[in-house]
Length: 354
Image (cartoon, rainbow, N blue to C red; front, side, top):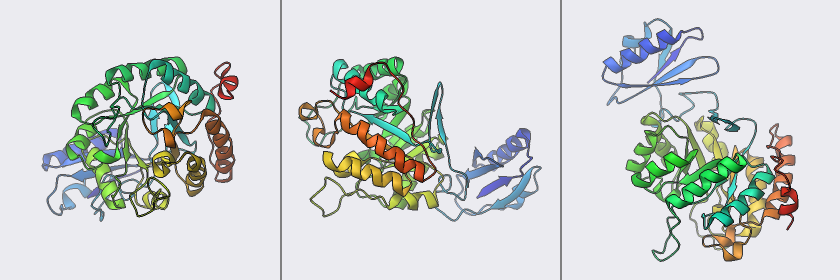
């Protein structure tokens, strides 16, 4: 059920409707829009009698929501959600494409800072790096843990980049929330419902990656788990699904971008690094992702990918990042969108050419 408030409804009227919903033993979710506020209702086992709410002051209409994912649905909110970050002009979901770049894993302070220089110079607003690494082999590099988080916090202070990093479980979630600006829930955890609920109780934005065999409905329902706990700052990320192809690591499903945008108001990014697993395919698929309407990209970059401790084969060189971003800017303009310009960090263009 969805309560749509009148355009001139006051804050007190919105609060009164939320209180009335709570008194019914249900949970209200207020999502302000550009023109009016919509209040979603969860916790009901069956249909709700609209008469209990539609006569309240400020209410325009009470309508049913047909989708199983209520808060994620465009029926709940017609306008695109835009995620902002305190103290930074960076956004995700607006006309400016969000660019996230960095190494798969934080290997050392020197490695992370070297790559962060290139990322800042490219114009990206976000730095990605894994402090906790879910690896197929228990003997592979598992990340630096809290030390890696501290290094990324230093990078934020030095370059002004917002930090995106993954939480593997509820224990690491608390640490990631302390250090990062955005918490990533990886593909392996897309249906880890206890972790999704815990992320929903965080006040940090959540980057939710699609599982390797997840349908679009399952993907959106995972986002619903987060939002049902009160965190409405969710960003979707397509990172490739498992198919029978053997020329790429995964199959990047770009068709999910317009499909998700039709059903949901949440922004959606594309990760062409995991989506292909091949360095020479990352930028071509990044171009395609921008052309199909993605709200941004997440790209792995490393200055020495042949020595990387994780995912070196899909990490592009800094020079490729710079060249690729110039191509992406031209595509974005055609679509009426833009990309952030380089941050102007001194001497970095010279560094990027090395």
